[in-house]
Length: 255
Image 1 (cartoon, helix red, strand yellow):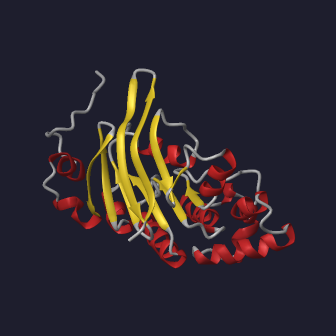
Image 2: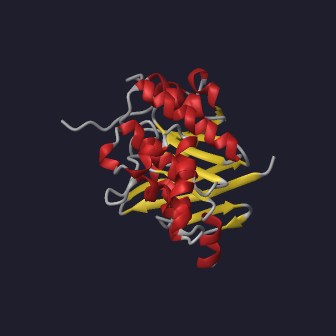
């Protein structure tokens, strides 16, 4: 199986704090990878580095065999343009109606004319279980679950080859979290996309992941099939997935 995303020796520090300390990770084409880890372990920094929102201190990030960190700005943009992103809190534009939010990327890249954008947005909204009546609403009129669906619709609008999900179930009740996870799985499979999701929600990780990786102390400390997360004999993974206070992970507590 070919490798869609290959990361080697990725390092990033903020002042004296080293967040990524030599991350190595392979994501096979068509695979759903889940990256788990505690708060502050570098999950978001990893995703932002791949997206180009953060510049790593060293290492390589290959997409389709090309290192985006060494590519020209134009080529790096071209490689990253195949990425769709579902942000943690949706990141919808409050000033735009739902249909413009969904079609925003297509309009910005001039991939569609404005006259066609609304119909296209309605078509995509239907793929995440939302009716045409939602298209004219503002994000403020939507529930948290509906906002996540709209954000997912925007992420899949360009039929991306790669999809990123940043804590997709944050702020949702368990039932709605399961609904959103189901939609994510359906969308990724329908598009044939390669995906990376970062989460600390073990139920979500098990539902949406084929493979899983755990970040700890700036490195990938374990990789394996997502169904093995709860039965791993790796002490770090075992403590994290079962939420045990005692173990190798020592949390810094403020008094």
